[in-house]
Length: 83
Image (cartoon, rainbow, N blue to C red; front, top):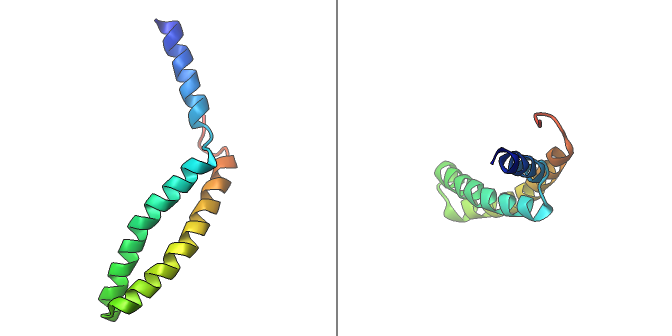
């Protein structure tokens, strides 16, 4: 029992130590949906114009997905905070 559990724990840690690019892409897209909705709502509130808010949100969507993906990949090679 303890041998299998120990092996499973080791495998889990090994699998969690590094993310594949596809996982980073999925996280990037899901987070950007949330972030872009937030940006559109704030922009609409500040400008009072839905077209302006959608334009700001559209630009922000693309630029921040690229930045977030790059950020995730850089952190994936940094060992800080890992066991």
